[in-house]
Length: 187
Image 1: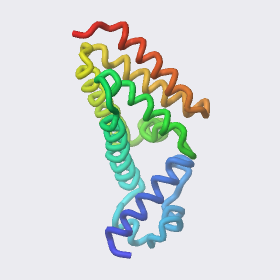
Image 2: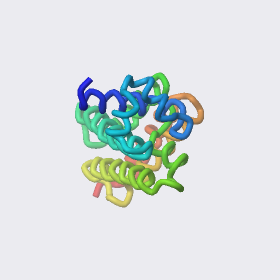
Image 3: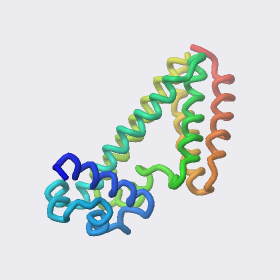
Image 4: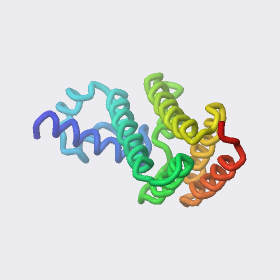
């Protein structure tokens, strides 16, 4: 296994384990066993568990945002339909086996108070999501200041779906977003 393959294997194993069980419940030895990357190589790639957590979150952020944007970009229709497509994508994500909510919220809850870098990555992810949704809302002709309402609907749906174990909060939030689009005049 070359260095790139080892890095990929370690990141995939760590991300899966951290998301399924929590960061603090998973040790480096378990990541070694799951990934097949020798412990010495694992520590050469990631000098600490914190470095591995950061790398996992950065990879997940890029992948998550790319998947959301790709889904929204394939939606035909009006700019308002693109805003609502966010909630359709959330429903599909919530329906995936093993869905445990937002990895960034989970990581922040576990480590945000003791690892500033984890808190920073979580904030960057949420800021990027907010900026993306704001762009969709503005493109739909709604005022920029109204965008936070759509973000809060999405974020609330994420948490509620994780706690309730059902994807239905995405549809509920989507219906609320449609009502908000209808109620807020085009600027």
